[in-house]
Image (cartoon, one colour):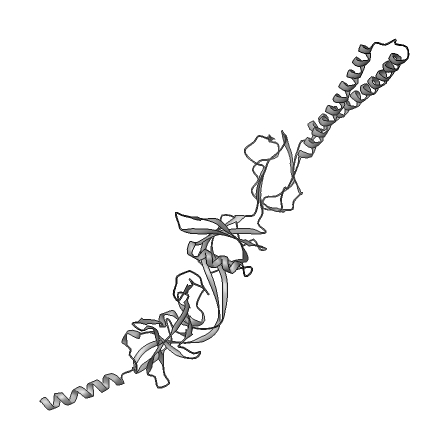
Length: 380
């Protein structure tokens, strides 16, 4: 009985060591890895103008349709111009009258002055009075000219034009209504959508990194939908705000987008990816393949005989589900991404791809970036 039991233990051990452990694997590959910082932002119009009347009168005509794109200077609406034309005619008539009186006053002044010098028939007081009359009429002429300029300006203001290029919103006042310069409700609102801005935030620890890369050149920015699945537009980083929000520990950044297809709308929430740099020819594996032990980071690599070896690695940076390897793994090496808890050096494995395997490494989405020894954010 004792001999039989003793003999069965080595056989059981051999059977255990010969059993292949099923594991998921992925293949290390060399590729260019763009490094992104991710943030949440909102779209802001470059310019928004509430168009109001600058004169009082009845809205006589509307020359736009809701949602129309207009260019700066396009005629939008007309306030009944007749009262302003009448005021202009009155001011011009007053000018003609006062100019005639001024001409007569100047002639009389010259006559009085001549009589004073030649015969003394006119007193000094009479000459001075006539001169004052001429000066007074000259002031009246200037006042009339100012009234004409004001009337012309009001006539111009009765034709409301677009102050900027952009998209018109909904009409807020209908034809026939009286409008006033003091009204709080505008006739319409024009929003400039091209170009358009996005304001977004990043952790304060990332701002130095961003600033350093800005000095090297323009940084591309991508705007994604709220579900982070659809890229809406591509633009460039414009600036970093001059202060940090102490409440949130974040800094604000502004990016500009050409937005030719109107994919971005004011007040829209978007996910933002700021491209810092691209690591050329990086060796990448799924980050779940990297294990940490007392001696540092390592991976299980599958050898041709279907046994595993422990390979120490140096990780340059990780991107949530992707790790860039500086040393320890070569392109084409097969690494274990699931089932490592059952392995040790020399364990026989049954490798297969699946969750965490080759497909995920090849098609991993852009996610948060982390250097090996620090924790700023980003994505490939």
